[in-house]
Length: 121
Length: 107
Image (cartoon, rainbow over all chains, first blue to last red; front, side):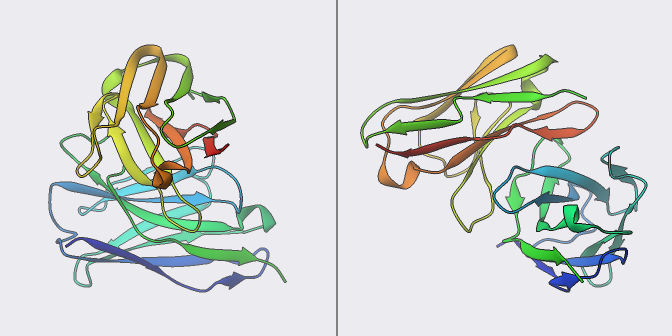
């Protein structure tokens, strides 16, 4: 059964770098059938797509965040990661990792439970 | 970037009633690229509808999606207690964007 689990620090200081990892179980992250993505949700607000990655390392980022975002994949650990630099309070959010099926790569069919990251000194 | 608008912001209904949620796009969206999600408090979003009208795995048939171009609709034929939640539409153009959501709460 597919499971996605986000992990990382719950508190990050302003101007520092937010780093999260999504551990995938139940399917190989190296499968050509899937992309892997990050989405965030400020508390009480709506959803914002951050970016996606393919097992080969090909990435696709939200233009509004592109200058600060790096998504990478570690196939040996069946994980993919998010780095967001120069964070501010506006980056406080629940961060979700999710899967996209390459046959229909237009929506997220499985999501992790999410992890809250607070940006504060 | 395509902007999605959802209406109403909140829909207050009783169990057993029909819910009709609207999602409007700022420009035409390929129906294949339109999805709906349900989110309950403290939970991740769950895919309900893909390709504007296809039900995701395990989704009851009281949920249906329709629409084309710039106007899409999610209908819940008879509300069950577990259906009271927030619903988001999402499209894929050159980027993924989500609507602001419609909250369906108990009247």
